Amino acid sequence: MASTAGKVIKCKAAVAWEAGKPLVIEEVEVAPPQAMEVRIKILFTSLCHTDVYFWEAKGQNPVFPRIFGHEAGGIVESVGEGVTELAPGDHVLPVFTGECKECSHCKSAESNMCDLLRINTDRGVMIGDGQSRFSINGKPIFHFVGTSTFSEYTVIHEGCVAKINPAAPLDKVCVLSCGISTGLGATINVAKPPKGSTVAIFGLGAVGLAAAEGARLAGASRIIGVDLNSDRFEPARKFGCTEFVNPKEHTKPVQQVLAEMTNGGVDRSVECTGNINAMIQAFECVHDGWGVAVLVGVPNKDAEFKTHPMNFLNERTLKGTFFGNYKPRTDLPSVVEKYMSGELELDKFITHSVPFSEINTAFDLMLKGESLRCIIRMDE
Ligand code: NAD
Ligand code: ZN
Image (tube, rainbow, N blue to C red; front, side, top):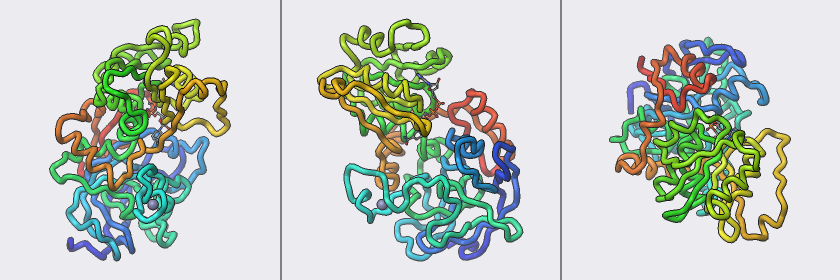
């Protein structure tokens, strides 16, 4: 055990004091991990849209002061009572949703929606005792989705921590904590395109590009990127996209445009926009008889999915997925191995990198739509 085990650690963390205001690097106290928890030294973290949504807190419950961050790579510093699968020194990826390995979801081969540790964006405290492990002068600072990785040290439930190959570069594989695995798994685990098939990807942000990367790995022969923003097209070629459609440039519905391009419809589609119209289009553009559409985007709360039931009777399938159907602890280590073997490419998702002291720059880049992933180097 490290000499810091069992003691409070003082370290730097980026605290969001108020919605939408720049984060402030503060000295925080991080309490030791309690039962079933681990304390992790974060080496690299990256910024995902979800951090930005909850920091802006426009449609969400404001929970402040809070430490955001949920995509990261780090090393276990110490473990609490009852932790059996992790030890100090282990290289890990924290995950915003967990795997308790005990509930009916964890025991089902089909689900990754753990009853105990499923994402909860309103909770700002640990699940064990309802307390925060972060404080400044005795005043608690709230957690975010059980991970709070914008801190040099953080405390996380054992069930939300994937132990990975220690040879994997944490400054690269940290992006597998959330968005990239979500898009990748949506294609590989859920859409499952047969080799040589045609796949449409709606939305070419980081998640959609990861879905395209999944289609490339699966051996799809045509990958059609659909986006309202044509600036996204050229860069998407690196992720396997072979053709592009901008719905704004057509008078016909995009479903019809895709049907004409593909002799009746695409074999698979993956929606990564969060826009309800794109969700409906992604379903209606798949081929009758065998087409499968997968929804990934998070819609706004009043959205309703409307389509004619004949579209189902004609043997089209509609599915949705959470975190690409990956079980965080069981499956993420093998995704890391796909990167280690050179099969999965991650470097192309990493467009920027900043020291921890410049974390607000990462927010600016994402808000301007300039970055896919910006890595934040915690030791600088
Ligand atoms: P992003 O904003 O970077 O990219 C979205 C893209 O969709 C943009 O390029 C935009 O131009 C395009 N778009 C928007 N409306 C469109 C439409 N009607 N037709 C075609 N293209 C359209 O977002 P991102 O970070 O890549 O995330 C994508 C979605 O995935 C978000 O809704 C996010 O909340 C969701 N997400 C879901 C999960 C999950 O587990 N299901 C996990 C992470 C993220
Ligand atoms: Zn569970």
